[in-house]
Image (cartoon, rainbow, N blue to C red):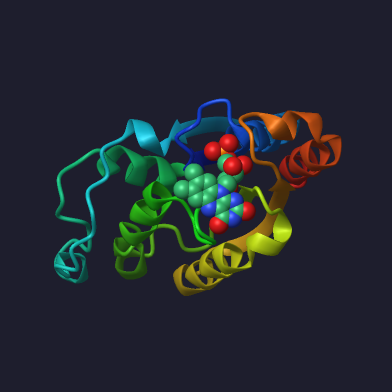
Length: 177
Ligand SMILES: Cc1cc2nc3c(=O)[nH]c(=O)nc-3n(C[C@H](O)[C@H](O)[C@H](O)COP(=O)(O)O)c2cc1C
């Protein structure tokens, strides 16, 4: 069984990254193989609503590094979406990825998979509602099972490493797969 984590923060070693690592560590104790991609390392073009994914092979016709991310997502049993809150939504890079998930509506390649959300925010859980709701509705639309969220209140880089409760919650979520 495979867990794929997608980190939507530009800060490697930042709060999202630390929490995602905790989830993956938990999953590893249960025998899952894990993989992690930093979205900011990949060229992800903007969805232009060309609707080509509604025709033929039902795949995206844009030619970029999403190809690798699509194949990793298709192979995974559980996908961890990690994003900091930026203006009460996900980071722009994470939103670009979400927009590019449109072909999955047509080709159903993520149907039945499980998904987890990891969201740190300076203001804490109270600021995460719109982001969590965006993911919840999108997973519902894609027939992806939403199995849990980790929230954390953190602002400075790696601040969450001093928050044992949130670290534990992330680890336990990984153990629960
Ligand atoms: C452009 C930008 C917008 C942000 N907007 C919010 C916000 O609306 N609410 C909030 O609580 N924190 C906001 N933050 C703070 C981040 O969510 C917070 O610092 C988070 O811990 C960063 O996670 P990271 O270390 O994984 O990058 C914002 C940060 C940036 C850079």
